Image 1 (cartoon, rainbow, N blue to C red):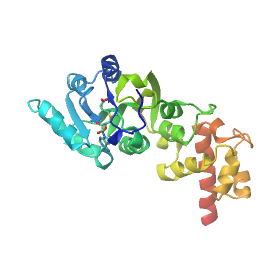
Image 2: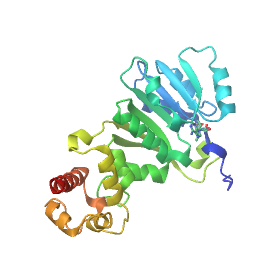
Image 3: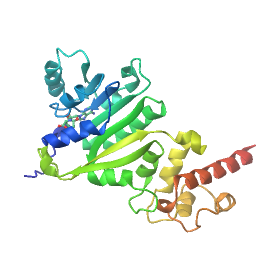
Image 4: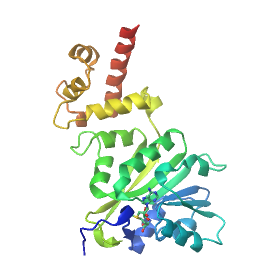
Length: 272
Ligand code: SAM
């Protein structure tokens, strides 16, 4: 039965055992990997992960749940439970000897975007290799959508600058207790940031993407004008590969990066 009362800290616990298994398996071979689980809760996925990986760090913000889990794994040296906020956790400290780690989480939905941005930051530092994360279906569909789809937006573009995204499967509210009001989708992200390849730096291109998608009903050119680019600047930099009236959702990341580079180059010349 669905309830209007939102559980605190996004606590909708997974009770579908098959789904727990699919999530753990979606990581692939983790036997030599360090895995970080975000929000382990009562540990529905934790046992399965612990059995599959070399080292497991669980990050749980609820003190009672963190205590419960720490007690459960008290005799298991390769599992560490941290009572911490994932957004305040520097994942690099968990790397140990390894080049990168994997992340798994049935995310607390109230901070999904913040957690993703936190993971992207870690991915740019080379700290995170793969992630298997569950989130609200609508958010997952937007993230996984490609250019040309009406679902494609700033979050899709920013995510796809950091990772290859695969939509794995969707679960109904009945897979959780208490059941949320929404369906949930599991995505796999294989991190491979594209900033160097596309010749753009993160801060500036991230701002450019946000400005480009600021108003979905406007064309890319109109969004950029609203962000302070003059018509003359846009005309001089506009590539043939982008239609003048194109909306941002129709433009590939490669073309978007090309336009950004041309605008930045013109401004740099102007400033000299
Ligand atoms: N993994 C469990 C499962 O699948 O049943 C619980 C998932 S539940 C959707 C989200 C979990 O994230 C809860 O245990 C909640 O306490 C925890 N959580 C919420 N905010 C958090 C934060 N900022 N940092 C770490 N954990 C958080």
